[in-house]
Length: 503
Picture (cartoon, rainbow, N blue to C red):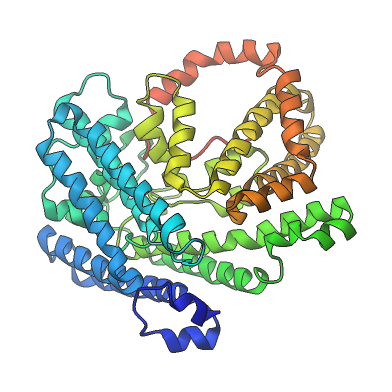
């Protein structure tokens, strides 16, 4: 298996013996090794290149050079795409007028990403290179486009901006070094997560621990106690433990419970449909720890370097979730489709909101879905999942607005409702993302045919029969709307991290 994938991996072959011993593709071994190396460098970066000891210039240089080295080790010459994409976009920022710079930068950056995705999938190595070099480019695309809009907000206008946009606005053009450091630093070049430019600069300059949101301040933040720099040690250790458990679960179960077993003719013919449902859920449950491992390790690396501090909890303990990308327990126990998505790939959801939903004048919801599909890639399975997800979201919203109020009459009824909606959410998510895993049209449609497109038809029936809002809920929402809008107006991305929970 490792030998077969080596041909498509243009990164370093230094770890080839380890790849053969553990029987994992070389590109995956390189990726994990580079992330562990980045974790070590993050600890040293925080200790020996602390802002109190080192200038921002040195921190930028070291972060950038280490990032480019890791990219070269993992992806070989493919890593040049990171610099080309960044260089083209920076040229647009510098030479195009500020009034339209953000639009042209968005088109150039996203366009370059799509070209790379098309050539990788349909020209070179369709489905063979598991450590996809366009993965880091997706994060860089988020960073560049966010930066372009934030520069536009800060240098051309201040009126009409939301509180969040005002906080993120940038009042000067970043230098080339600052720009490359933001895009290609060793902490996030391989797996992200994305972050705002202002937050990154605050980390580099050592100002990230200053209180920014006094409305949420507690004793440490409002000056009642002497403020000291919090340690990320506890959170880093906790996240590394989560990584170890996630990796162990994934390596133990991924080959035993393959998703494509769901479309095996003998399996479909001989397995009762209820057991097919259970198998699909368990197979998806075994697949998710791969993402838990990658994203949690990336978060731990940033925290180890001192990046990710997000204020204090009510008990005075520091929070290190500024750029966290997921909340595992909220995902696994989600009782609605929306709640699942709200806690999955959090930073990407924030990016979609900032660059598209808040700014698109015509049908922002449809535009946001379209941007999400284009950004994810060109595998047909992505678009099948995306289209199915729209129907699931609409049906889940209609059921919640019409059915849920009837279960709020007592705690017992509410618990029954939560159990039912949890099971329904897990089945709906598993059903929706099968094409995302299978990637191609034929196997994806084969799976849906084996289920007789039952959830597609059920969603269509629900949307046609149930109103989006019941009259009872609609009247209540109208009363609550002014208060909610005022609360949203006072909320910024950094001090309102807690997502709305289904109750």
